[in-house]
Length: 248
Image (tube, rainbow, N blue to C red):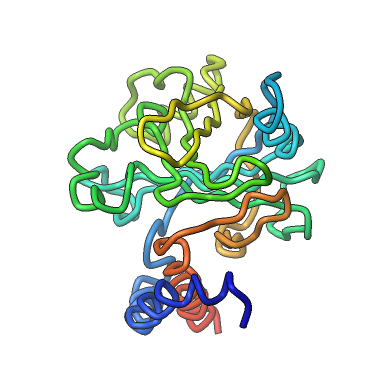
């Protein structure tokens, strides 16, 4: 066991305790236990011209991306909830559920830090995906930058619409499609810097049941760090097992 595995061990152990319940819940829901329904879009990623290691981070993410917006709990209701945004950075030229070794998955949510998880639904605008900031919750490491925090900031909210899915559709039609990926050192008081622009292009016509994000898929060099990321290892595996049981 290497040092990275030793550091992840407490989080993995905590996740293993709840993993059986997650698998059972996914089986009963016939979907992911968390973020059961979502909207997947195809996007273009352009690095922001910065200096030094920040530029290296932006350059590493250039290419295309799958972007999945979803509610954490409810399948279709816009009730009190946390929203999530999962991004897969890829060199693929067409949307696909199959990842490549050089793909990078980022899982972000409207939760600023783990300690605010229970309060996050109170500050989340569930009626519009593009009216929220999405955070990496726990830190990442990248090259010379060391430990960093990430957030995703939409450039502007969607137009008003009966549902957030319709609002996102109208935003695409009107060109309200830019999101900024921002990063900062993990120390207190550090300011976020824009490192990449993610431009939403169109809905991705893929089978969402076969799409699976992995917080430790780090083909572009962004390595997850911290307790919360480690918890996700057994939890996500359990959710996949529950969904596979339904399919079987």
